[in-house]
Length: 528
Image (cartoon, rainbow, N blue to C red; front, side):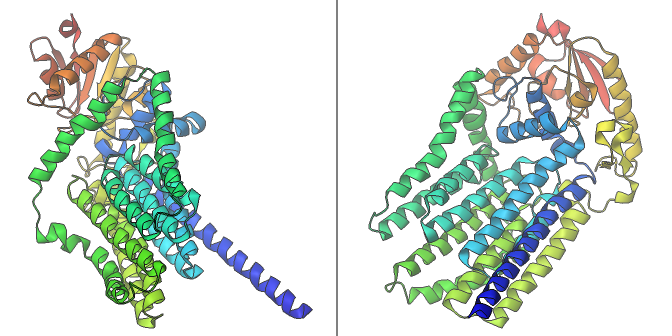
């Protein structure tokens, strides 16, 4: 009897040790892959966006109030925290992305373990996700945060339906809130989907346990109240928030929907591995149709499967209407894991299924790791010789070990860094009030510039054009922020002077060419 008890204790401890090893390995993978690939290559408009935003907040400025932003304020504040405690450097920047990758990886492992999937499969699905999620860009990016928080929200609503825990209902709404304040989509669409799902579940339960609905509401209302309090403390006007984050972006979204062209490749070919991953779930749906009248659990599982299908459809749709490279391939391990679980539960524990899911998992992980991590396709550095990259510490010590190479100067990254170093010296010698309008948005931080550009970034979508009904509001906002800071000079890189001429015209501007990359624009006459 005692021998049997000792054997049970030994087996239990052995299982705990195995699980700890799994958790250690996936955690290390989530951090290492993001860290490693976050130091290779840059795509200026994306790579430096949150770097500057975190620096803005570190200097006491806030989104909506001090700078125009149509997306991602949550990332700005998270980066501010990393800069505050770890310093303004590339390491603290990459660790921000790595921490979110770690959160997703551990959440996925917990999700599969809570479903009851074999721990080995929990491990390999989570490991794959850690490789495919944030390493594709390696630095904080609004789309990655938004999809990751949305996916975590999907995980928790499934667990809430399965286990009916109050905390799961609360976390469902909380992560949807975090996703929305990273970027408006896909969370806006998921909110609609979740409303139907929650309503269906309460209907199936004959409206019992309605108290859980309170926790769903709490998960969204409590952070909203904190947000309003934060706005009041920092004098952020609700009007500015609504125009910049709701009203103006809605027009962009409608325009994108009108302009999108659906082709076979856009809808099917490029997402084939996602569709392959869904095949076992489709078989399960047909199997469950015959059992619908038998158990409440079966009905709930069918709701969960449709929730997965519609959530994946939302991720696909939002990916198709964005301008970015594809980033959602990390949903493949999630789909395969849930397909695996439901197929085993309702059909059989088939070795053929195990072979199928492992085959899709391994092939897709290797394929997209090489394409997006090794070849840096998300950053448009595929077909670029990454061995030509130069250590960015020549530009600033805070960028030590960042292997600098960008699409525009892919054959001569040293030339790009030389141009930026020259511009940095000019800015440091300029004692007048100035701002920097550039895709190289780490320039304010490495020059110690305390005045800020009243835009989070500049492109044709983030800035209203003259025909947009919010252009006059934007123009007043932009000029007013320049006057408040007594700005005299604007340093511009690339061909971004049109964002100044659209506001002021050309007559009052005094433009000086500094090098092939940069210009200095004196706007003193424009502000009189």
